[in-house]
Length: 126
Image (tube, rainbow, N blue to C red):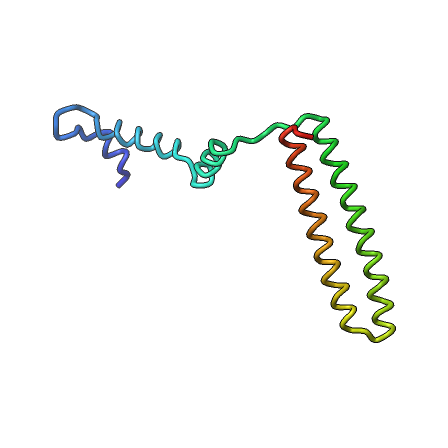
């Protein structure tokens, strides 16, 4: 039996008429208004740290920084890979490992430096 049909034709016991059907319709409307946990989380996030709109100049600066640091990282990789090839030809495995660690450290240092500069641009301090 369809509950909504039943609610429409059966008055509520309190003598209030068609209250049950109205209550079901209101409940249905409330369900449609409910937000997902994702939507609630995004609202909390935006309250805690609202999204910052970047100007065209800031976007340009960020793109230039990305390009500049990508080139710096590539330059370091090329230089250290050449060294690693020389060490591999000479059979110096310890030196290869040192060069690999150096490359990892240099890459991390440059990426951290990039993020610091990008954050300054986003905050308008650059």
